[in-house]
Amino acid sequence: GACFSALQLGVVTAMVSEPLAKEMRRPFQLDKSMSPISFFALFRKSPVLRKLSSTLTLQCFCEEKATSDLHSIYLLNDAHFTDDLRSVWITCLGMTMTLAGIVGKYTIKKHVLGLKGHTTLQNVATALMFLLMGSRASKATIFSALPLYTIASERRAGITSLAFKAAQDVGMGKGEFAAAFANLRAITVAVAPLILAKVYALGR
Image (cartoon, rainbow, N blue to C red):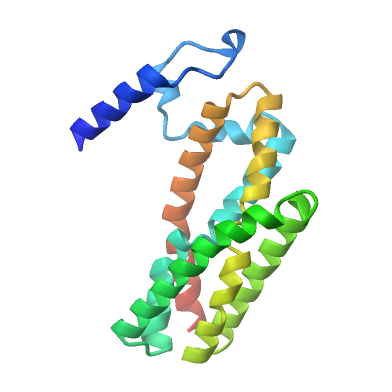
C-alpha cells in the first residue's frame, strides 16, 4: 500500500500541473492544509456557499454509504430476507447505481432538465424511494423501489457544481473546495448511520 501511494505521488508530481493561478496560491501549512475540520471554511466564506454546503450535507445523509448498514438490518429483521436474497438485492442495487450515473449525465444537461430540474427529480425520487421501502416490509415492495435509484443516486451533482462555482467566487481553489467537502462528506456518512439507526429503533 505504501509503495503504491509513493508511486501515485511521484506520478502526480511529475505529470499533473497546478491549475490554480499563481496569484491565488498560498504556501502549504501542515496544520491548516491537512486539517480534518477544514470543512468549516465552507460555512464561513459566504451565505451562498453555506446554503449549498448545508444542502450537500443533507444529501449525503441519503447516500448508500450512510444507509447500507440500516438497509441490511431492515432487510434481515423486518422483511425477513435470507442472506442470499439480501445479496441479490445489493447486487441489483449496484446495477441501478451504475445506471444512475448514465441517467444523471443525461438529465442534468441544460436542454433536458438542467441543474434545477435534475436536482428536483433526484430529491423527489429519493423521498419516494425511502417512502416506498418503508411503507411495507415485503420483498415485492422493496425490490420495486430499486428502479427509483436510477433517478435518485446522482442527487448531489447539480448542487456540487453550484458549490464549486460559489467557492471559486470567494477565492477557494478547486482542490481546496474538494478537500474541504471530502472531509465534510466523510464526517457526515460516519455520523448519519448513528442518527438513522436511532430513528429506526424509535420507530419499531
